[in-house]
Image 1 (cartoon, rainbow, N blue to C red):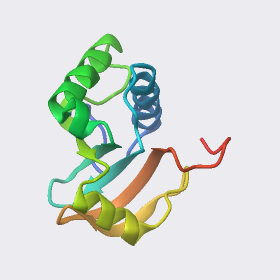
Image 2: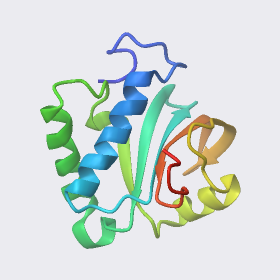
Image 3: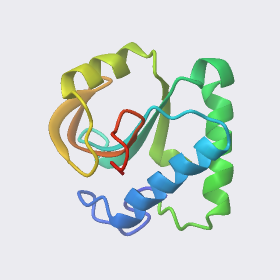
Image 4: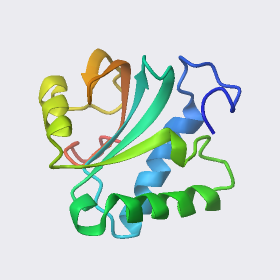
Length: 140
């Protein structure tokens, strides 16, 4: 459910969503899907938090199949993730918008919130990294 449906403040991400996203990344990895990076963004135009998952498997497996796997995992969590399929998007690691955005932000660091950037032509006031394969061991 979206932020308003969950009764959550629109500007507060919440620990449940942070940990739920991390658990989702772990479940996808266990299911054989490689996740390069995952991060929450607060998109000003949408007035909501969005989970962005970046995977090199999107061209091979297809974003629809990955989203179906995500939906099954979220349904199996019985709401403990505090977000739904409507709160996230999946992008290929080769997506030019992804490459440009990561070049602008630089290396994502666990637990650090980035502010005032743009992703896919949307104003993003906050970015909270969930996971990156580039983090050093023990990073998250």
